[in-house]
Image 1 (spheres, rainbow, N blue to C red):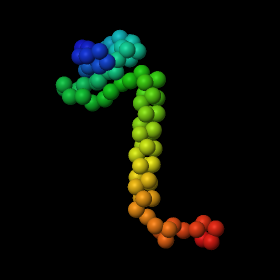
Image 2 (image 1 turned 30 degrees about the horizontal axis):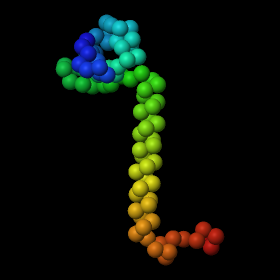
Image 3 (image 1 turned 90 degrees about the vertical axis):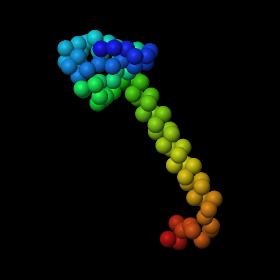
Length: 87
């Protein structure tokens, strides 16, 4: 296991089997990249950090969809809309 920079620790899958508690304790301060044959295969995060990341991704997705809707609205005319009352 090796810490390459402050927020990231790299560990082999075999180390996860043998040093589970040590690796899990690192999650308080860093993310852990799991490798198999020196290739990254997974990332472990503290659950609170994962939830924060999900919230940011949800916000970014909503913002992007809102911008797409705004652009479509700018390009449309009244005849492109359906009156829900008469539909």
